[in-house]
Image (tube, rainbow, N blue to C red; front, side, top):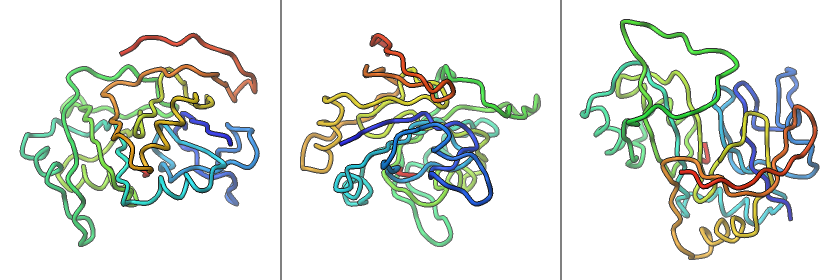
Amino acid sequence: MKYIILNKPYEVLTQFTDEAGRATLKDHVPVPNIYPVGRLDYDSEGLVLLTDDKALQHRLSDPKFKIEKTYWVQVDGLPTEEALEELRRGVTIKGVKTAPAKASILQQEPQVWERSTPIRFRKEKPATWVEIKIAQGMNRQVRRMTAAVGYPTLRLIRPSIGPLTIGDLQPGEYRELTADEVTKLKSLTAGGSNFKSPSKPKNKGGRHYDSRQNSSRPRPSKSKEDFQ
């Protein structure tokens, strides 16, 4: 079985083909017969899990297991505590109320890569990074949630899904999961412990691949500090 995580770049579809000629996973992961678990929007970035383990793929996509996904969301403006409380209680999107989310302002700006298309900043209305954790996977859910409370999303990055974290993978890079990561991932849908995402990415080790050079290079592990 193959288990891979990719740091999906901005404006890449979470699929392997596109009739319109847009960038897809095929441009970054030259591994046959694997499929993404869930999705990540075209204009979002971050962790995508791919596997040929169909049974695990089905279980991870089942909402009854409530796999927690973490998002770093750069929003337009500085959210009030009232807005954050709305996210925590759940907001209504097209007549459907979302499940309660975990939402907090990041005290330090996350150390992330520059996006291929820069965010347009406004001096009179600074942007703020918010961490949101959800276990649902409604279409464009996080963006719609922040818009519903008055703070549109400017940039969205997913650093983790359950026990899996993006570590130091750069956009377009991927790696195989370690045996320990696979065991933890499977335990989430087999009545095992409820592994929670850390607030910051943690490098789990394994081999890293830079699809832009179509090469692999081992990197040492470092002690560092939905599917949408």
